[in-house]
Amino acid sequence: MSQYLDDHSAAVIIESYDQLVAYFESAYKPPKQWRIGTEYEKVAVRASDCQAVPFTGGIEEILRRIGERYDWTPLLEGGRVVALQGERASITLEPGGQLELSGEQCDSVHCAKVEFAEHVRQILSVAEELGVAFLGLGMQPVSRLDQIEWVPKKRYGIMAPYMLKVGKLGQRMMKQTATVQVNIDYSDERDGMRKMRIGMGISPLLTAMFANSPLSDGDLNGFKSFRAHIWTDTDPDRCGLLPFIFTDGCGFSDYVDYALDVPMYFIVRDGEWTDMTAFTFRRFWKEGLNGQRAIMADWNAHLTTLFPEWRLKRYIEVRSVDSQPPELMLAVPALVKGVFYENDCLEGAWDLVKRWTLEERTELQNMVNRQGLNARIRGIVVKELAQELLAIGRNGLERQNVLDHKGDNESQYLERLIDQVGRGLCPADLVIEKWKGNWQQDARRLVEGSSYRIAA
Image 1 (cartoon, helix red, strand yellow):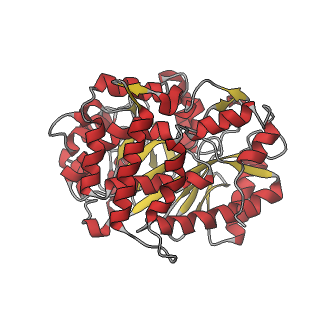
Image 2 (image 1 turned 90 degrees about the horizontal axis):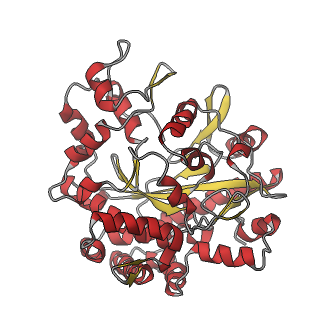
């Protein structure tokens, strides 16, 4: 997440409320220009014992070697390599060393497949030399919080102590969890808020079908998605479902008002980071601090520190999904593209969830964290709703009919997931079965059974 805008507007002083709304309006794109971007986070462990790989001598060295061998430019903070910048993508780090590819804006999932495969090839060619394995799980399975080294980024030095003030699990979120995020475009305010509302509505279904974090601190934790549960006790000001999204006539101004009243983390001036956790953005905008006034770069940075299930920026970010085994990674952007880039499919998805109250939505979100596809709402098993959502997504991809070099459309990326959900299974169910069975609760077998591999 960058704290800067990529254009001349970054240093513009915020004089009026309209500028904050215009930030979102500036992102309008006609449907022919809609793209899909995917951000893939992965936890790294020592192959020998499944302990989290430290930043020093581990993750940092992986970044150094990738930068030296491939077409990436190292980005430094305090003299340490904390990210890599490519021509159309970047590789960044979460606070506990989770490695993330922020992919390019692709016109198809076929494009994302090529990008992801090359990324996996690059990171594994380096990681294997260092005895490191990347796991297809939604969080660190063995290492406890105090056993994981902080990535030495200044923003994390501000965020970490603040997390202890506002929730019990925020530092777990920072250091142990991993997700797959998908970014989609919108054509205007109505389209953007409609996608936000429907996305928030189906977020429990996404959490359930992709739940993949049943292991933590060396054993089963009682959840299918412990990652999603962690978000429920991270920071109530900036996480979860947003009630106003479900109100009639909701617009960009409602999201602006929400964001204005969330406490800030920081501002950056001339490379110096200032702790702003005592200020909401509204207060900083109105009062300033030590002669500094709010600029558009601050607004951009602040929006990246809000963590609802679906997030609005100059695109919409899907945030409800655990990181996946590599064979299911592309199912996430495929499902989102199929549902959200076809009008009838979008309406069909809303029909599945539109009758629920806010209380029911919140209760279901909490239930799927533990029960996955077995959770129920109004007597309906979530598995059945997930199957309907998958059918809608597949239909959307078949309509779009974007073909690869073999003549196959993007619905191919949903086939494994459709089969798995049809059997009532999320990834966590398979992990739990193996942990109790063939893996015999042995961390080394866990590594062998869930590590990324270079396809033959």
